[in-house]
Structure formats: structure tokens, C-alpha cells
Image (tube, rainbow, N blue to C red; front, side, top):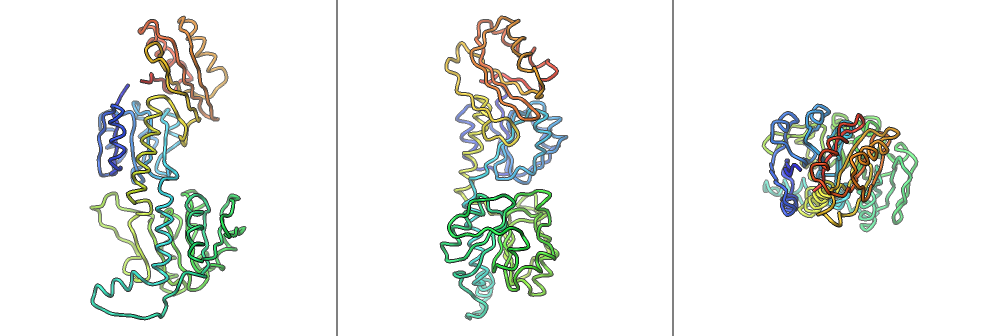
Length: 405
């Protein structure tokens, strides 16, 4: 088996350490890379990325040795999942590890905006002493509107209530309210109700430009907007206008439609130099605790998949969790990804029986597109076992077949 692992975009060293403990050869880079650059490197079994690197259909079509991709972040919109599935590449992410970090940044932004801390900090650094209570408010008793009540939004809800805020939320799916939070039935309903709005939605066609001039004007005059979710959700040109017109009191933006590919690239945006706007460089999940959690979570998922064939937690594969091989000396584990058509398993078993190979155990899971089977076979003749692997891969339905170590 190819034991090479490539980690890019400065993934926490904890991931490299976990892979190396399992005897993988790990290359770690701090910058992102294009699909073309990745194809020019030595073949690797698993690729670890964060949010900057875009993996297109062309990349997957040419990455014949690639078995899995780990997105060391929450989202996977930077990955062409359909192409990954068609090429038999399992994709894993970490949807929960940095939720607390994002929630805490949201709360910090609410307090910062309400007390004008960023502006006053800047003035004091310039030697200007502007001690005043004007336009400075407590958050206790204020109303928070949460758009997207998933793992992050619900944590924000709990923290906000602990500060004495009233919470309304809107989600396209019915969610259980935590504490005293109240659900509303539409975006239009929640906009006029709140002093603060925070977005916690995925990047989908439905959330692109979710907040434009129309929605901004429906917001309560003097309110604040916070976006730590996706850069595509807010039309920044319209937000600039709403701030200049003083319809909104301020905003805190952590994500942008276009972001630098590295820390060395200059960032330019229309919101810069507006003193009632907090701008941060996509740091919602960038805490030591979150990055260690993500590194542990995704690296372990990749290790389990490469070592035992465990696909649980994959965002694009059938969920299969076979137990460890009990007797490795006499057992060979084979994993086969195939098109989900009728009779595939029967065809594979027929092949195995013709070669007079004993099947010890067999695990199968399917989606509408692919099937994933893990088979433990008894080893008597090593060459015969390898030949059967080749024969299975030659089936018209097979996408990728491998031996697990």
C-alpha cells in the first residue's frame, strides 16, 4: 500500500504526529496549492487540506493513487464531492471540532461592537483619550437573531442567554430550541426583531447573497451584523452602503468572498477603514484547541479508513465500520468500491469462489451511486490472493480495489 500522506495549508502538527505513529510517510506544507501543483508531487494515499485549496473534477480524474481526502475544517464546499465519489476517493471532515471557537468569537464580536472596544482601543493607541458612555451599550436585555441554528448557532444561543440576551433564530430545518430561544418561520420575520444578527449557515446556492440591500433594509435601524460563516452569504457592497447610511451601527466580518491564498498576500476590501467594522482574517475556528481537535479527528478518520476500511464519518461514501482483523497472519482484507448496480456482490463472490478462496467475513454498504464492500479472505496462496484482487478490479463495475494493511 502507498503509505505517503501529504498535508498542506499549515495543518496542526498533531496530525503529522498521529500519521507517523502509524508508520505513514508524511510531507507537511504551510501553504495552499493548486490542483495542478498537487498533481506534480509524488503519489500519496491521503491528502489533507483546509479551506483554501480547491479540488476540482480534473484533479480527481488524474489522481489515480489517491484514496482519501481529509478536510481539516468544517466545510467541504472546496471539494468536488461528485468527482471524488466517482473516482473512489473517500472524503472526511471535522464538522464539530471548532464549533466552540466560532461561537466564542461571535460573542466576543457582539460585546466588542456594543461597547465600541475596537474603535476606542485604536484611539488610545494614538494617544487620544475619549472616555464617554455615548453609544456604548450593555448586551444584557438586547435581542440576538441567529440565522442557522446548527452546532455553532445553538452554542451561540446558549452563551448569549447566559449574558442575559433574548434569542430568536431561523433555520430551514426544524430544530430543538435550547433554553428560552424562540424559533421564527422566515428570514423576513426575524430581521425587524433584533439588535444583533449572526450568520451560521453553510455555503449553498440558497445561502449565496442571503443578505443583500433588501434584507439589510429590513433589519432594525441601529442593529449590528456578524458573519463568521461563509463569505458568499453577504453582499459586501450593500453592507458598505447600509453602514454609510447609518442604517446599521456596525458589523463584524470574519469571512470574505475572496480571501488571500497565503499570509503573505495583500488583502483589500471595501470595508477597510470603516471604524465601526471589525475585520478578522477567517479566524473563527483558529484557536489552538480547535486546531488540535480537528487534527486529531480528521487524521484518525483517515488512518481508520486506510488501515481497516472504516468509512464512518465520510461525507461522500457509504457508512461502513468493519472491526479490526483478528488474525492478520492468515487473513487478507480487500476493499472494493463499485458502481451500485444489481448483482455486483454476486459477481465478486462468484469470482472468489472460482479461485477457491475462502471468505471469512464480508461487510457491505451502499448509496444511490456507489457500493462499498470490505471482504476478509483466508490466505493460503499469496499469489492467488493478489491475482483475485486484480480480477475484482477488472470487473466493469469496479471503481477502486485495494488491499488493506
